[in-house]
Image (cartoon, rainbow, N blue to C red; front, top):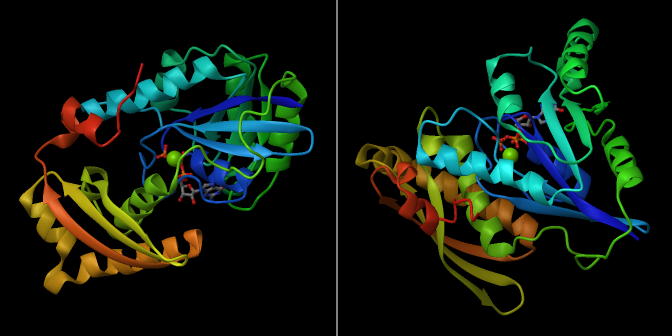
Length: 294
Ligand SMILES: Nc1nc2c(ncn2[C@@H]2O[C@H](COP(=O)(O)OP(=O)(O)OP(=O)(O)O)[C@@H](O)[C@H]2O)c(=O)[nH]1
Ligand SMILES: [Mg+2]
């Protein structure tokens, strides 16, 4: 069979995780309308009769101003080392700017490059042509593909084009596996996704979720206890909300999502804790699994 690793890089919020979820056919990575949602390397696996494609989702590359940003960028840069192919995702709804140039200046691409223009539903013919010609000049040999991940347009073209260039290789993962991450990761990420969607300003980015307990009760029930870590007391108050309303909403939303994904009845307890400036502290980042392991 043909097989290989395909790194998916790009600026924050361009739709990398949405693309992976749609290709793999299930939620392996959380997605939100806010930048810097993904904070880890997540491998999403697609196995067909002829090939196994392992897509590496990465944090969006951005100008960092805290340690967390440095670590996230490094993960994305380093993912290219293990890749047989690289997908650079570009937001087709936006014109080329300094953030795009920053990414290009910092990326060393070592494998065949596919430039995927996502969100073509938000582009005009003229804006699309302009963007394509800019990238043609920067990467003349790259293959360009126009897609819309939320409308599932042309994602099959990505898969077909990648298979063409993959070498013969081993089947790295069992056929039924869709992610290299287990339930523990999914649970804390879904809780974080719900928080990111229900909060504003700096709060979505100041939150980490730490799974404290996961216990299976029989075949179809699960108890989950998680800590939500924020950076300041004031953020703790906001997250809990008046009369505990917001934390209750977070718990209900996360429970519903996870029951759907894990096919279990879930009982969830959430606690909010403060760890000052954890995003700028390497030790804390490491304890939350947000560090580049190179
Ligand atoms: N209009 C439109 N929106 C899309 C499309 N694909 C993704 N989005 C939206 O773009 C937003 C960002 O998607 P993500 O998949 O989280 O983006 P990402 O590149 O993984 O972002 P980071 O993890 O922050 O780097 C979400 O609100 C998606 O629903 C698309 O084809 N069209
Ligand atoms: Mg993402």
